[in-house]
Length: 337
Image (cartoon, rainbow, N blue to C red; front, side, top):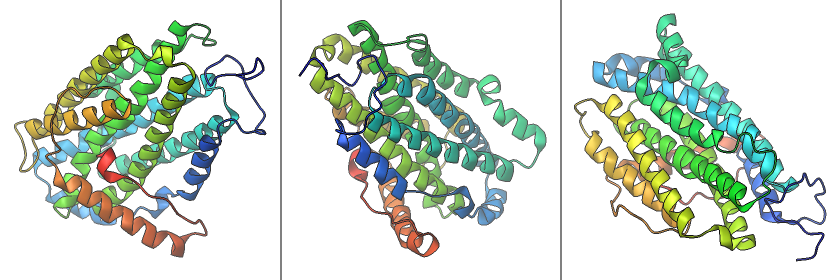
């Protein structure tokens, strides 16, 4: 590497797109543009009738889910602005992060619409919007997120290996634990309802969110791969142990949320099966990062893959007739679920 070339995490604010040092990040930005969707395309009318059919336990689950959704993507968006955009020194990557920030805004709008549709009582909506303060199981997950934001928020630049390690842990936390585990746990509940023929609008919008989140994770893991190539000394046994401990903590936080949602258990959905699913997903994230899996659990939810394939197929079928945006590309469902 010449003295004028920089690594991805070197301090600075590169502006020149030519010559392009990281063309894969630019292609990811272009692929994300092809995936444009709007909240107005999601039809929630049938969901209102379905909500009236739910048992009190199922209604509790839905209320908790939309409360988490309403805050989760806002936390992710804040970290994009405060941390990732600030320290990933590549104009191609910042193009993608700008697009991701737009997608997070669409997700927040979708969840806002869900809250307004699902919770007609103003007091219930107010409590859901303030879930981080009012709902202990959501507060625990939020505190997990804030801990990793606070680790790097005050860093002006990544001057030392210790700084870069702290940044990597933040990036891995948001990709593998928050977008890759917390959201995937929530998706499982949505698809459980969908497998029973309920809440089709919620499932449709969730599948489009799922596709976005899959791309967000893939981008973040590509950043990790790039740093690993440029600065392999950062990826030592200590980092592996810290990431493994982080994922274990995330699994427990998400399982606590599952206990809140499931109570004593619902037909086909309980905390035992959710633990198995979360452990399976955590192992997948560790393996993608090049680390050893720790749980050895298998996915107990066959409806996850089946519903994802069905809805993504419908996505591709309906898009060209509705918009002049070409949708291309594939999602590797086996890897991500």
